[in-house]
Length: 167
Image (cartoon, rainbow, N blue to C red; front, side, top):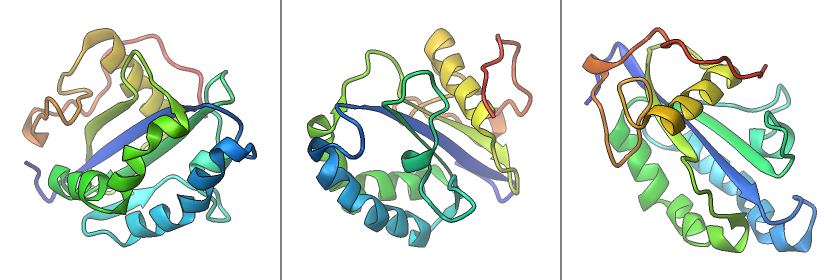
C-alpha cells in the first residue's frame, strides 16, 4: 500500500485522567520508555517526535490548550508495519489498558497521511490533519486504520482549512 517514495505519518492524542505525576498515571508513565524503545526498534519505523534530549513528546509537548492532552507523532514505512507495532506488540497490551489512564474522545484521536520519503511532519501539520479528519472524515488528506487510502491517492499539499496554531 506504499512505495519507496512515500512513508506513512501518524498522529495520535489522548486526554489523561490526571496529570502525569498523579498516581493514576504511574503505570502508564512507567511503561513509556519501554514502548518508545519498542517503536524505535520496530521494523518499518522511520521517526518519532521527541525533544532534543530524546524525551518522548508525550512528556513535554502540549500543543493544545488542554494540558491533559498528550501528543504523539511518528513516521513509518508502511501501514502494515505500523499496524503490527500498534496492535501486535507490547504496545497493543498497553492500549488495552488505556481506559485506566485516558478519557474516551468523542471525535478522532488519530490520523494518518502519506508523506514523501524524507519529509518530517511538523506539529502544526499533524494538528491540521487531525482537524481535517474531524471536520471532513476520511480522505486522501487524512485517514484511519478503518479506511486506509493508498499513497497513490495522497494529497501532498494541504487543502484549505483554517490553520491551527502550533509550532
